[in-house]
Length: 183
Image (spheres, one colour):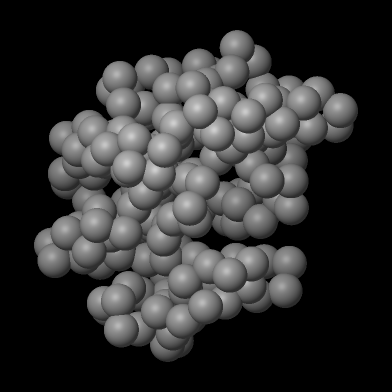
């Protein structure tokens, strides 16, 4: 637990060395790289996320992808995540943790999700993910049997992320340098 706190603190300090514009520019490279992923190209239904200010910026990526695929975004409900179909910026409202979340009916056909693109505070080269510490994604990802892609800035890569039985590893991790790991 202490090691995870230290990694979170280190990543927060590294992130402060970049301006918002620099992070958005890196984000554009990252999402451009991920868009070339064969699994994503073939996907019909994609689980994505609507980024917070300190995550790889995905707002434009969500918008572009939703023109050609069904894009699902998570909604925080208590201690869990539910999914909703993204139908446009006008469907978003501030939800838990000040996250823009889509409204509408819960999307429950989890077997139809072809790929999940997941944020993280840090990842290692084995696909292990460090989140914010609440376990939302780990609990949810255990329900999915789909290809999982972690996205982060290069400075968010760690040599090794401590992980346990409740942690869910990514199949691949992508940064502005392209594909960097596979479990």
